[in-house]
Length: 316
Image 1 (spheres, rainbow, N blue to C red):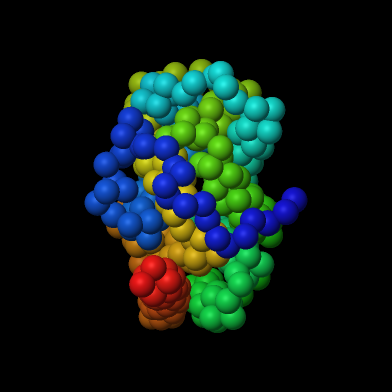
Image 2 (cartoon, rainbow, N blue to C red; image 1 turned 135 degrees about the vertical axis):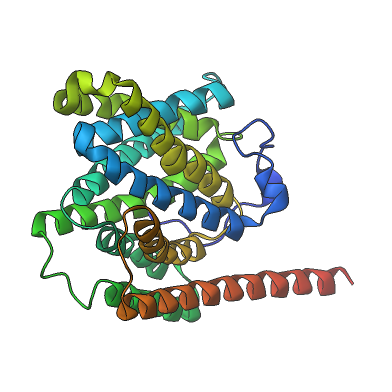
C-alpha cells in the first residue's frame, strides 16, 4: 500500500464538525492539542481495560469497546449511507478492519506484558511511519530521539518479556501505522466523523463473534457493560474522533512522531490506576520522548509560519 505525502488537504476542504462528538474542540485547540488529548484519553482507557480483563478476557474487552463505541458514534454522527463511491466504502472497510486488528492485537499483548512496555513496542509502528513519510531530515532526528526514549523506557531491551506478548504488541504497532494512513484518507473522503462511525461499525461486527466465543454471557453483566462503556468512550470514541480531526490539518509524519508520547502517557496511567511505579530510567526515557515530541511540534509550527510568510510576500 502506498504511503501518503506528508502534506495534507487544506482545512478549507474539510466539512464542518459541529455535530460530531467533541466538535467544539477544533475551535479551542490546534491539531497538536487534539492529538495530545486523544493520547491521554486512550492510555487511561487502556489502564481501565486492564482491570476489566479478569471479567471477560482480552477479546471480550475489545468487543465491548468496539460495540459501545460504534453505537455512540452512530447515534451522535448519524452517518449518511448514500452518495459515496466504491472507493469511499473500500476505505471505510479497510479502516474498520485495521481498527479491529489493532485493538485485538494490542489487548492480547496487554494480557501478557505490562502496559508501559506494550505501548512502548506498539509505538514503533508510528515512528517507522514518521521516517518513511517525512520529507525533512530534521523529522528523522526527532524520530531517532523518540526511538531512543522508547527503548530506554523498555529498559534497553525486551528479552524478559513474554515473546508472544511482544509479537502481539509489534503487530499492533504495524496496524497503528496503517490506522494513521486510513484515518487520514477517511477524514478526507467523508464529512464530519461519518467515516469514523461507519468504520467503527465494521470493526465491531468483525470482532463481536470473537468476544462472544471467549466471554459468552459474561458480556451481559451490568458492571461489565458499564466498565466496557467507559473504556469505549476513553479508548475509542474520544481519541479516534480527535485524531481524525487532527489528521485533516496535520502532516502524517508530525502526527506519527507525536504518537511517541504514548509510552510516557501509558506509564503515567499505569502509575495512577495500576500502581506501577516509575524508575529513574523510565523517567529519563519519558524526558527524551517529550523532548522529541516538542521538537516535532516546533518544527511543524516553524514550517507553517514560513509558509504563511512566503504567501504574504507573494501577495505583497
